[in-house]
Amino acid sequence: MEKLLVIYLLLISVSVATSQSVTDPETFLRCIVREGLNPPSFTSDVTYIPSNSSFTAVLRRRIPNLRFDKPTTPKPFAIVTASTWGHIGTALACARELPVQVRIRSGGHDFEGLSYTSTAPFFVIDMFSFRSVNVNLTEGTAWVDTGATIGELYYRIAEKSNVLGFPAGLCTTLGVGGHFSGGGYGTMMRKFGLSVDNVVGSAIVDSNSNTYTDRVSMGEDRFWAVRGGGAASFGIVLGYKIRLVPVPERVTVFRIGRTVGEGAIDLLMKWQSFAHSTDRDLFVRVTLTLVNGAKPGEKTVLASFIGMYLGRSDKTLNVMNRDFPELKLKKTDCTQMRWIDSVLFWAGYPIGTPTSVLLNTTVANKLFMKRKSDYVKSSISRTGLGLILKKLVEIEKVEMNWNPYGGRMGEIPSSRTPFPHRAGNLFNIEYLIDWSKAGDDVERDHLARAREIYRFMTPYVSSNPREAFFNYRDLDIGSGANSTYEEGKIFGNKYFKDNYERLVDIKSTYDEINFWRNEQSIPVRK
Ligand SMILES: Cc1cc2nc3c(=O)[nH]c(=O)nc-3n(C[C@H](O)[C@H](O)[C@H](O)COP(=O)(O)OP(=O)(O)OC[C@H]3O[C@@H](n4cnc5c(N)ncnc54)[C@H](O)[C@@H]3O)c2cc1C
Ligand SMILES: *[C@@H]1O[C@H](CO)[C@@H](O)[C@H](O)[C@H]1NC(C)=O
Ligand SMILES: *[C@@H]1O[C@H](CO)[C@@H](O)[C@H](O)[C@H]1NC(C)=O
Ligand SMILES: *[C@@H]1O[C@H](CO)[C@@H](O)[C@H](O)[C@H]1NC(C)=O
Ligand SMILES: *[C@@H]1O[C@H](CO)[C@@H](O)[C@H](O)[C@H]1NC(C)=O
Image: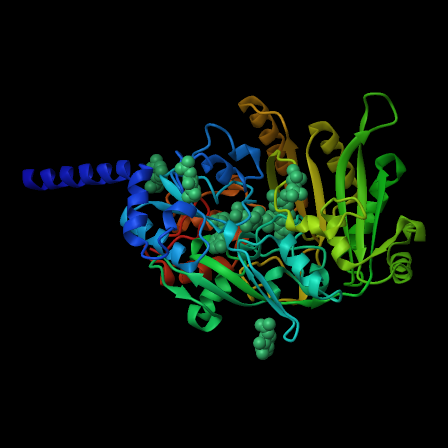
């Protein structure tokens, strides 16, 4: 008995010693030197520890959300900016040896900062230098490394062809690694589905530093998992092979705003039946923002209908005047442009901005951000719409994007990829709240506003489960500090519905030690 206790205490002290020593960056560096056979320059141009004068700049380079860039934010004890498979393999060998947690970062746009923060001692494998894009026109495909931004991808495609594009997100600084592995939606989803619906191959490194360079060697179910299930639960995805999609030489964009006083509620009523059922060449998003009302000090909601038609403006007018005549779209509201210029339009650049800005991956204005999401499956009544807009005015500062589904989205079976929100969804809601003033009270106040609108929306959105979009990461809907199956089920059913069980099976097969984990990773079945 006593002997056992001694051994037990010894074990505890050993594990305490280990966990203390690993937070020491020098120990990590020594491990990297020991494990890293090639290239010899490994430590000097790839591994950053806090004493290095560039450490903070390298860490911040891909932190767009100021909420996770505070002095109190847990920081990694090292950042490995891998540029070869060998670097990744070596870094993982040290993660196993020490042992410590790894966070994988591509574009760093995770809304809860999970790619570069952790409560346990950790280092970051940063894919920043891992970002080549190879477009093959003969095949109509491209290979894109996960550290590339989708802006770089769009640019490289357009550089070779003005009639090919790719369906991915609106914000051009998103990283391919997080964006694709969480689904990836954008303005062409009604015609071509999500990014993952157009992925045909991939490559992954597992926790033993083994690299699987194609779909066959990584296994069909792991390939399935990294197309919407969040790759951070399964390994480090090195790249994706994608099928490019045809785009016309000219597309048409427009933006029309109407306040409540100008009939926004009637238009939203009509939009709910139109947007998911119209031609799949047409995507009309709604954004709800606050503007000054008629009386001084009064606020009202502005509903902006922002659209893109994959074709010329005469066709756009035909379709809009047939399916949504109430909006009274005119030729002068429409701007024709190349598809690549529409990418800049959606990203918020003024018309005429040179496409080379897509190669600049620095986020322009960083803000504190919180996001939440919902799915709407049946039209909200006129009364409901009125109450929602009134609530937006009352809460202040929260905005919404309504993204229409239907078209191709409704045809793809919900089990084809881990992303389950397919047929039967009218639109997705993104709740946005941004702020620029630092401070715990300010933050608490803004988070409370986001949670209040979310509570208020309960009767209008999906239930059992209340579905959520994985790429709009939200720890409020459940998080698994202990990574148990039951904990995972809470957020897992919302993000993945019935696909959660298959993800747990795949996780149990390929990562039974739960090496790859974070607050919302897929747990192992126990
Ligand atoms: C301003 C803004 C606009 C957005 N707009 C859209 C949009 O239009 N459409 C849309 O679908 N989503 C959108 N999103 C959400 C976005 O798709 C997700 O945040 C996505 O995860 C970002 O990918 P990332 O590589 O930049 O993020 P990261 O923070 O680097 O990674 C996100 C997650 O993926 C993991 N990961 C990253 N790289 C790898 C890898 N190589 N292997 C394994 N795991 C990896 C990380 O560990 C983390 O868990 C937006 C987000 C922001 C901040
Ligand atoms: C910081 O790290 C970089 C990359 O590892 C290296 O080139 C540089 O010499 C280091 N600088 C300092 C001051 O340690
Ligand atoms: C493009 O793909 C074709 C067909 O698979 C292949 O023969 C060719 O070498 C590829 N070209 C490039 C530049 O990779
Ligand atoms: C890249 O964009 C950032 C943010 O907008 C800007 O500050 C910087 O000057 C740009 N860099 C180049 C080379 O244009
Ligand atoms: C989960 O982990 C937390 C701390 O990480 C701990 O306090 C709690 O007791 C754990 N819960 C279970 C059910 O193990």
